Length: 274
Image (cartoon, rainbow, N blue to C red; front, side, top):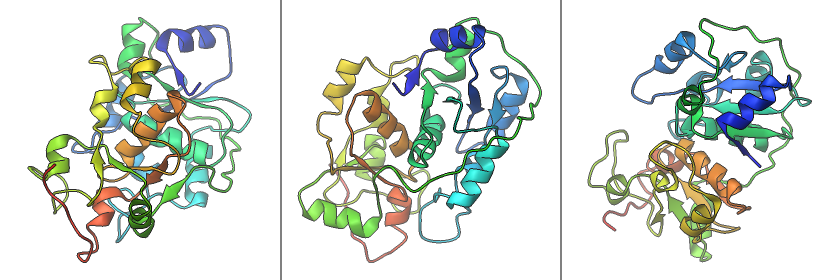
């Protein structure tokens, strides 16, 4: 299982289990806030991982706002955070596992054998009444070496081929962004022609935890092997891929560049409305 509750993680840590903890708190419109919150309080032993610096390459052209880093850079960042192949990794963010889902996908894709997301994030940990630490922690360097890609991934050309072949592309952004009514982040609003809208927010409870597995399966029923998920820059899509994993649905690909990559080529068509 790729998710763990705050109560279960607390029990494992209390029993002395060796677990590598990665704090991946991130706020798109507030750079630095996640790290500041980490310094103010985090799960004891957790290392901070910066999404922009450690889980994305510099945005210098095609590839979207959060292009995936190369394997060497990612491996260096993970070893610096204490990740080793021999120890399970638990990743968490502030609440809804948005950035934690990105870290989960990247580690699993790179071949780490056991990666879990703390369901409900740091807010759930605090609500559990578990211990917290302040300040910065320097992790003992790990030995994790990323391997070849393990999970399916598509680029813009492959998305078009996939749709032409009758597969689904689920755009998991909010409905108003999918329709193009508003676009607060990217320079062009709308969606990939032929994509369907499956908002990621509908997969979570008001407390920020994933829905029960049976409800997840019902909401994710349109997706299956050969399909793909897209969002604004590949982060929310990875969160949904984690939900699909919890629901037991394999084989769905990530469009890592997502909408911000699609619109980088003005020759690509744009759809608006439902």
